[in-house]
Length: 143
Image 1 (tube, one colour):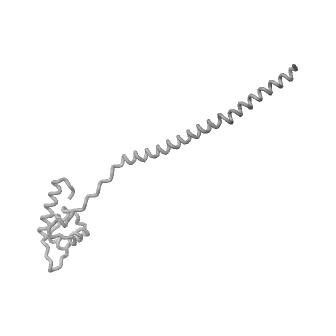
Image 2 (cartoon, rainbow, N blue to C red):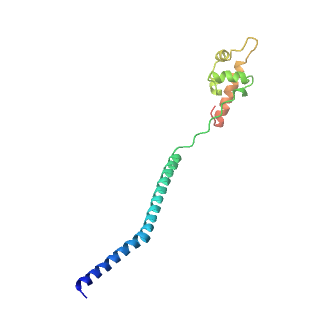
Image 3 (cartoon, rainbow, N blue to C red):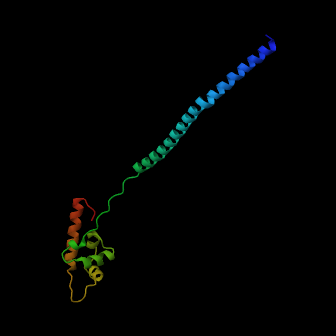
């Protein structure tokens, strides 16, 4: 056999092997690698999303929960104070027994501004407010 022909056949055989290997890579190996790469990318994105959620949850755990609002003092529990006078007192900023008890009888009468035909027992209201305030403080609640 002619040495040139043998070399040509050998080169052709090597070329066919390279082409076959390339085709196997393109048809079989590369799609699997791309799929694995895609899966890794998806997993990375999921990890990033989970990281964001974890950071948010950690910040919520560091923040103390809001305290429930203290219910307003029911000044109408004082004998003689009804819803109308209670509203007047609340509008004047008197919304606790402590604040009411701190008033003088004259200040209370001026705040209430009751008509002449209506009398209020300011002394009694203030004494009841003091008693309610002491009771609530003894019970450990805000007045």
